Amino acid sequence: MKVKTNEDKIVKISVMGEIASPVARSAYRITHDGRPVTLPGTGGITYNLRVGDLATGWKADHVEPAVSIENKENDARFKTMANTSLNVLSCIGNQAKVVTGDAKGEIGTVVGKHGGIEHVMVDFSEEVMEQLVIGDKMMVKAYGQGLELLDYPDIKVMNMDPTFLNKIDFREEDGKLAIPVTHKIPAKIMGSGLGADQVSSGDYDIQLFDDKTNQEFGLDNLRFGDIVTILDADHSYGRIYKTGAISVGIIVHSDCVISGHGPGVTTLFTSTKGMIEPVIDSEANIANILKLR
Image 1 (tube, rainbow, N blue to C red):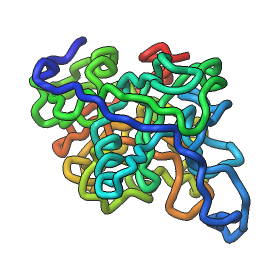
Image 2 (cartoon, rainbow, N blue to C red):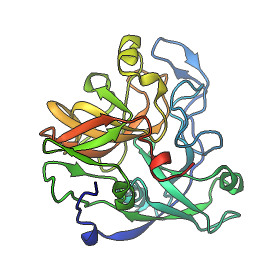
Image 3 (cartoon, rainbow, N blue to C red):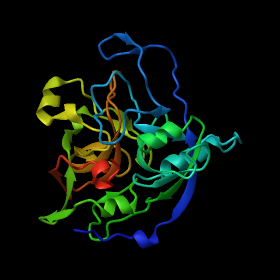
């Protein structure tokens, strides 16, 4: 089933980023149970992790799959605003074209937005990643913010390219929009990212420190690019707990060792009135939907 949208009314605009270097405040991260560890984190080119790969179990903390980009405008007055535009306007499924370096002309796909570090993640083949270097620039055709589902006014859409949306296998069940997801996640274990007043950039984290909950909801096999639902969560104007509300997002970074953190979720759909019906489908991953692997 194809849903009706206002795709013909939204604007496609260019935003620019460059491959960001990994950064670290210190050698150690302190784990939720008090251990100092040294691990890879955000940024750079992650050669052996892409959408479709496990987002859990790695010796890592907040690792981002494939390629991480940010905007580094030289004019100090506009640096923050330029990177905010990259983060807000880039949508999951957008095309990103490499415009400098040995991989110039290659096309990747936006697969995540990470809050705090304010990165956008772009998936490329392993062959292209071998040609990329930190500092290479790429232009994203930002397209998707403002998208609406015309027949489902109680469901908000954000951060989503219409091409990606149009390839999802939607159904209607009892007046609700059925959306395929790999996992259902209780709002009680959602952590870092709560308190934000908008969800048009960034993500929030699934805490995986409670073994009983992980087993109950099957969370040990979360993958980068999985489409998941957060139960009793409303993301209309930020992220809040609300009984009966439903939100759907995509896994954008790895699990974490730090208290309050875990695999990140960038929001794609939300319904205050619970007009989304999540349907479990193990293949509901952007790598499968857009045939990226």
